[in-house]
Image (cartoon, rainbow, N blue to C red):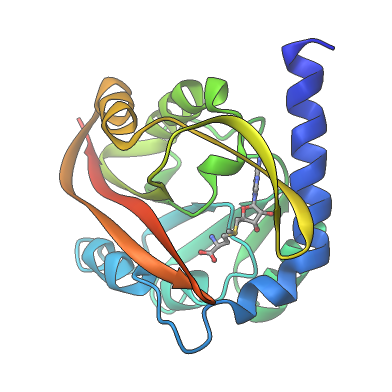
Length: 212
Ligand SMILES: C[S@@+](CC[C@H](N)C(=O)[O-])C[C@H]1O[C@@H](n2cnc3c(N)ncnc32)[C@H](O)[C@@H]1O
């Protein structure tokens, strides 16, 4: 089996997994507020009303896209059809696309900002540098990129998560920061924050960056 068919198999696993666990995933945050909205506000305070924002791995759109859509145009992309259907219900004025973030494409300078929360670690890390470069192209000059990704180092592994097999793959945080800079961004703020997923503590790397 070659790397491409491995990647396709892992993406199918992630897609089928989130189709099954969309509701269980949403419940993970109950009683444990994650830092997502706090970081989102750091971005939103920099955006004029009516800005266009892309959310890669938008999930159900709750809570981030609901918040973004209050003052901006939101486009969400997710590999899970179930998540996309939930997002369309939760954010009726948004545009939601069922697609792989690693394959979807947009014209250059389409968005004032791109956000991606807890998602890029589900794509093979061999795709991360090219995805960051494509994101940079989609953002308008001086636009923003807000990212969270698990603060670990995984070559690519399948583990059980919420009772389904789930694929995870990422570089260590310092390498990831270097890749964001190499893709053409200045990092404005970054931090590793640990959050609770039910009873588990999970560290995530957060980055607010601006296109150079
Ligand atoms: C942990 S959830 C995060 C959802 C949402 N961003 C949030 O803040 O709660 C990861 C999401 O990424 C999506 N995803 C995983 N791999 C993807 C890919 N290759 N392309 C697009 N979406 C993907 C999953 O379907 C899932 O909805």
